[in-house]
Structures are given as structure tokens and as C-alpha cells.
Figure 1 (cartoon, rainbow, N blue to C red):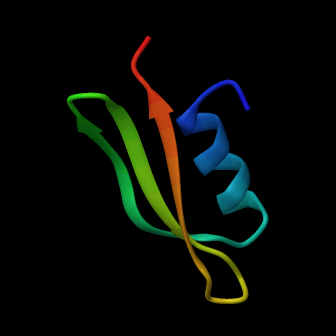
Figure 2: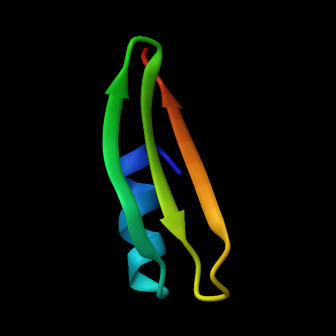
Figure 3: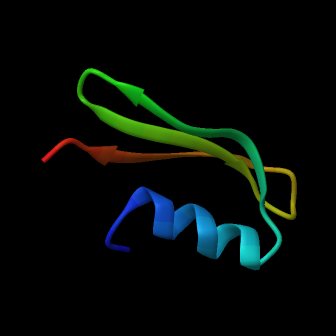
Length: 48
């Protein structure tokens, strides 16, 4: 993936739920997703 936004979009397209949308912190960005099997997944994009 090239970006966190792209990853979130693709995950939604295959059935993931967004638990917490893109959030900015000092080191970068993160989002929390729930996959169709109910697993919670955190994804991360560092600032460039």
C-alpha cells in the first residue's frame, strides 16, 4: 500500500469495519479496523 488512506479504503471494500478512523499523532498516522472475523487490526503510516 502507498498510504494509510488506501489501506483503509481497500479494507472497507473487502468487509472490514472502521473502529477508529485516521488519527494523527506526533510520529505519523494510525487507524484501527475490525476484519470480517472480528479481529482488531491497527495500521500505521509514519510521517515522511
